[in-house]
Amino acid sequence: MMWGSGWDMGLLWLFGSLLLAGIVLLVWLAVRVFAGGSGRSGGPRPARSVLGPSQARQILDERYATGELTAEQYREQIRVLSEDP
Image (tube, rainbow, N blue to C red):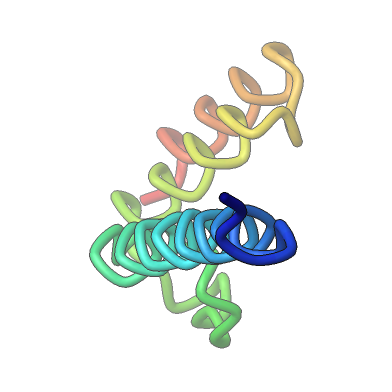
């Protein structure tokens, strides 16, 4: 005895795939919301001249970590920061 034309199993796979995609999207969104201070929010950053030494060092650390600066450039910038009054 056949319980339909076989579409039920296809719809089950579609529902399962959509459910999985929705869960992945929710997890990704939760990580974005709760990660907070990653500095990649797209908002404007304060001008470099108003940053304190610790904020400037934090920006340098982030740029070095993301590969924007080489080790030599990073060390040079740290040296320059330590010379400023």
